[in-house]
Image (tube, rainbow, N blue to C red):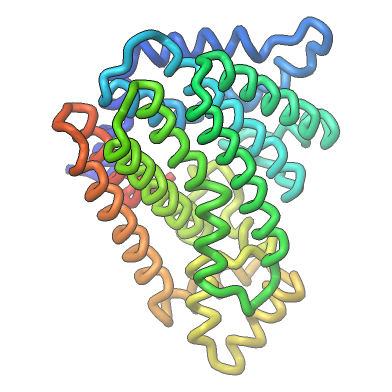
Amino acid sequence: MSLDHARAKPHDRLAAALEEDLLAVGALIRERMQSEAAPRIPQVTAHLIEAGGKRLRPMLVLAAARLMGVGGSYHVHLAVAVEFIHTATLLHDDVVDDSKQRRGRPTANLLWDNMSSVLVGDYLFARAFQLMVEPGNLRVLDILANAAATISEGEVLQLVAARDLGTTEETYLKVIRGKTAALFSAATQAGGVIAGAGADAEAALREYGDALGIAFQIVDDLLDIEGTAAIGKNRGDDLREGKLTLPVIRAVAAADGEERAFWTRVIARGQVEDADVERARALMERHGALESTRAEAELWVARAKAALARLPEHPLREMLADLADYVVAREV
């Protein structure tokens, strides 16, 4: 089976199985992103939400809810809340990182301005909380509200750790668990809770989302070095921004004196030249950092699938397991 087929099949199968729910999610997104008072809000929101994202996080909510036998429609509200939280963080991240490209298109802060991106992100956070409240389930509200706080913590920790060559793998894990895995985990857990999942199933769904999100971010960090233009951003952006990703941390740990000087110039001082991305990749390959980082992602995928094995047999459970494998196999 080709990599393209392996990459597309799990996501497509899951989307097809959840087609009716996803249509409802799309309709509710369009309804709740509107603002009569400030037309720029739907303009900025639509630019990002309609840019071809896979809506992976909303699908996790929907799949978890359907897997646990949800009744009613409030799982759709939670899926939209998760998508709004994710979109808000992307708008804010692009301002913080001064990004110019997202999903292969100009960022909102480039097309409009930083103030619009920040304020529209704030609006989407507020809309997300409105959607969280509507089901009247305090447990769900607690899960998603905690995730929103944890995401911010992860982003701040990444900001503090940037350009610090002393950043450890433990700190890196805290960063990605906060900025990425927290929303994956909250999505699957909240989907289960709204469906009435018991404590054991809720824990399994939370652990699946956490492990899936960690694997997802590790691979994202690999793609910054190994990816092509299809990743929708400039290769080496993380390096230019001084982010200490796992392959960088491992290459720095194994560096000799000359290599350490290179990392100090590029990461600590932020003096990145065009040829430095390829040299960084070569150093990572020399010390096995890329290979070991991919192996680390595969370990987290195995943990995700082990968590799923504790849930009832269901076609959606198998699709979620395939999705975990896709996370590591993907090239974009």
